[in-house]
Length: 126
Image (cartoon, rainbow, N blue to C red; front, side, top):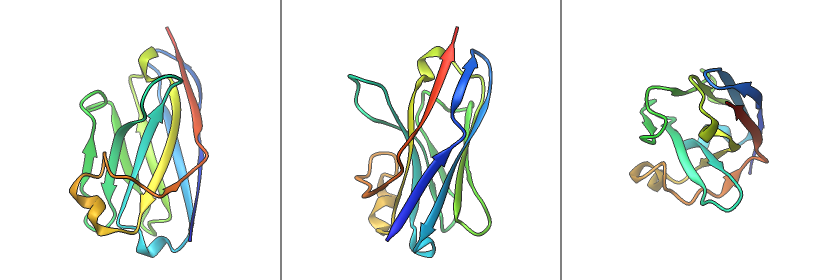
């Protein structure tokens, strides 16, 4: 079992920054991949960043490369994403997800994660 709880969302102006957190509890030591996803009404969910918890490899969508940074704490119980240089098009509900299945490493931004948080809203105004 794995519970995920996001926090850190908010409203910022374009160019601003936020740091989102995802606190994990349960079998956290079994997590193979974790990632951040976002979704706006009427659009498909988009994987923006992911991390291999074993070796720390990171993966980013082209739309956020150079602006977003995913990381995890040493205990691997909290996932972070630093979001900088925010744009109005970054406005979305942001979700964290995690998987115990090593197959997630093949495509961590596109994997069908089974464990999800409730989301945290990010709103960027121009």
